[in-house]
Image 1 (cartoon, rainbow, N blue to C red):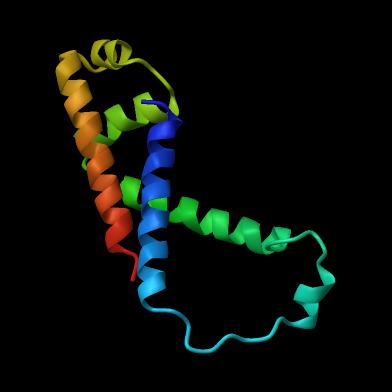
Image 2 (cartoon, rainbow, N blue to C red; image 1 turned 135 degrees about the horizontal axis):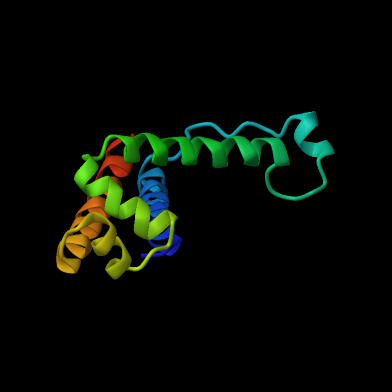
Length: 119
């Protein structure tokens, strides 16, 4: 599994949050502040964007740290270190099918924890 797997988890969590937000829109829209008007880069200002990205990464890291080690290790080796299932199986001394199932279960647990934390 490549980082694309973690990206898919984040993307699905984001889409779920957006769907929920549509059901509960903000009751009042505030006019833009002068600081927002001054920024001409379009979209969010760089500092705000960086804060949001770091907050998402912190949430993923916190959820990852809560995974049991037997699931977190194969996920880390395949997603972060980009090792093949065969390499991970050899390194951990377990069958390749076990690596695949633990990686799948770890992704599912991670996704569940990320979506449960959202209001």
